Image 1 (cartoon, helix red, strand yellow):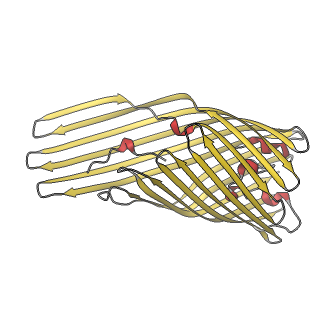
Image 2 (cartoon, one colour):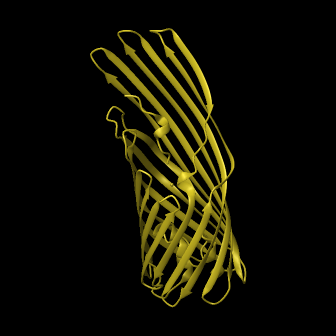
Image 3 (cartoon, one colour):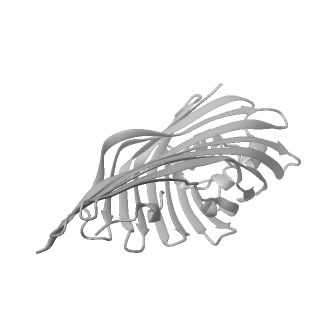
Length: 355
């Protein structure tokens, strides 16, 4: 059975009993409450209204991540990646008396390597598929505190998506042999504008953020195909333009609320896009004298796919250095004959230093 690769969708603490804001510097990597992370450097710049004066750097990486993919077509074997270390976020913030500036860089990569073989009484076929995708995102933001409880933010975001696909299909029958070799390379460079606000009062924090539909700066690609059939001595070569679709990133609205600031903290955020995708995040924190325990769960539905992610982390701080570490599990289901069930298991590490 031949898999149409172009239908494959590519697809990234307990704390002090006396409340200490510094302990929460890297917890947002695990509680998934970025839109309500008051005073922290995230992709939602309105929280910068309360960022501490000075310069900060933070980063996170997936350590020893193991990924495997099972295809809905039983003729294809499991695709797996070896244990790897994948940098995922680099962030820097500069706090001022009125708010601050930030730059957040994220990186997501995706790789599929699989093959299938079908044997019948009168025919034999093999298919090999190699797919690589990388998404680099840069968020440039600024936030300003307009009152004791309100802060506004704006950001300019850039994205670069690179895809490389190679597929080979070979079949043999009583009448002859057929070979199809497809190669595709595509690159998308796009940008969005974002704005939002954060409201902080007593024991709760509200956050809202809106991002515009993507504006393509550069969208190029080429699809090349070779077709050989021995029965009819046919040999065809074709070449055509192939671009990356923008459907899944067509404008996003996210709203979140955080209850509590000491001890137990509960977080809920909801995200929608103009094309109907929906993502919900649930977060939890508990602070004690020896650190912070934080956990987060997200469920994301888009097109014919669903993705779930669960994280649990432990965070500590010492002077101006903050760190957090914990396991995570992620699964993605793509429906259809050319779909798959992907699973990732690993350890996430995050740290921040302030000057």
